[in-house]
Every structure is written in C-alpha cells, then in structure tokens.
Image (cartoon, rainbow, N blue to C red; front, side, top):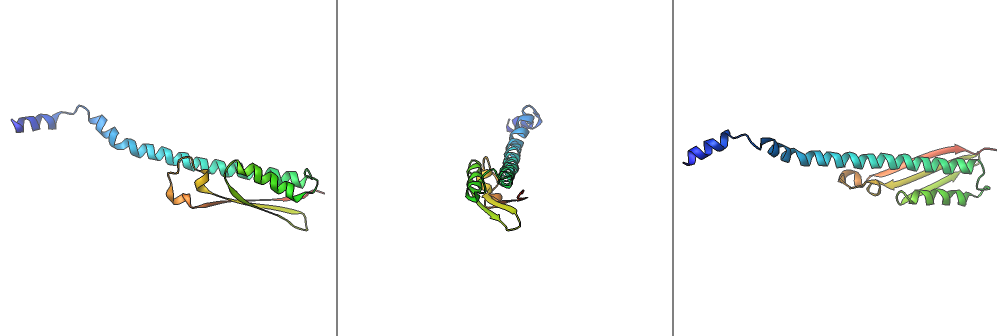
Length: 132
C-alpha cells in the first residue's frame, strides 16, 4: 500500500510549476529590490549634481549679489531635501567656484537591501568659473 502511494506521488506532475515558482520568487523579488535601490542611488546622485551646478551657476552669474553665504545656504537647503549631506564650497581668487558634497548611500536607498553599500559615502563635485 505504501509503495503504491509513493509510486503514484512520484509520477504525479501536477503543481510542479507552483513549487518551482515558489522557489525562484524570493530571488527575483530580491533582485527587483536591489535594482530599485541602485536606481535610487544613481537618481539621487544625478539630482544632487544638478542642484550643485545650479547653485554654482547662480553664484557665477551674481544672482546672490556676491554673498557667498547665500550661495552656500541655497545649495545646502536644496540638498537637504534629498538627504542630510556635508557641503563645502570654495571660492578662489581666480574666480573658480568649487562645491563638494558628500552624503551617505543609506539615506539615498529606498529599501536598504544592500548592506555593503549602506556605509558608502557618495561624493559629488562641481566647478564653475565666476563670470565678470
């Protein structure tokens, strides 16, 4: 009786696709979340670069009336919407405006599925010459 039941169970292929999909589904779901997190990091880095370049351009065209602190505050306020970041702005005598910003990748990820990247610092640098 037991052997007959075992043979019937062994030859029955119903539900095979369900078992296989159940085994593969977590891997595909994790891959999807991983791709989402990496996409968020790249998008946020591009957005931060745009904000820094806009701030540098506004300062270069004398939008802030030569007020270096106003330019720094503008960039810091815009970047704070993305993630807490450390911003340093350098104004040289030859008219070069250099802005460096760094932010944690942990703050940029949607889910945080990549623990290795969580401690990574994302650095963004932009330079612009001041117009006369």
